[in-house]
Image 1 (tube, helix red, strand yellow):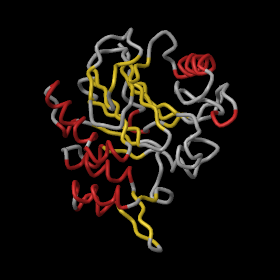
Image 2 (cartoon, rainbow, N blue to C red; image 1 turned 135 degrees about the vertical axis):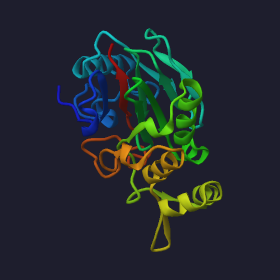
Image 3 (cartoon, rainbow, N blue to C red; image 1 turned 180 degrees about the vertical axis):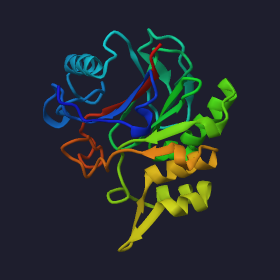
Length: 256
């Protein structure tokens, strides 16, 4: 199975940690969903999506385990997952667990997939940050919830932000740039780009800055992969395809 499977090099020496940012190659879907679409409800054949999920899990080494996903709603809700038999955690844009062999998945097609871990505690979390989730601070909220639920010091959190639409392609209007600046002030200003009368947002950079503000050390924050809109052969992009497309998955969890 030909997979686009990007990893954090610094996490490769963490024994028992399985993670990755997957791309669109290696699946069975056709047309605008070609080929490794892992999302239901986007117009693809549900049976093919099931087959894609099964093939993918076998390829990444969790065939006999589940990858728990969410009903993503572009907000800042975060749920804790304890049951490794669960398929979907519920309506949320962030999930976290301290349980072993519970793998967490986030589906994206331009939004920022954020994977977080606390290696010495073997805690994992995943978040979905579109512009609405970024506006509400889902990345910082995830760090705060790790501290509240598990007593984690934010400086012990490591984070990876995967392939997402880049400032090269993500043009936004005042409906996005104005509230983003009002909410995040200098952080948003650092993430906005202006060219030929147009405004572009570096969504991944703004989430990185939010993580830093929440206490995650810059040297423990990793940026992985290209702009999804530019990398047409390797990643789905909602913006590039004007809505009719599949979704790739990013996942993280600890083996026993």
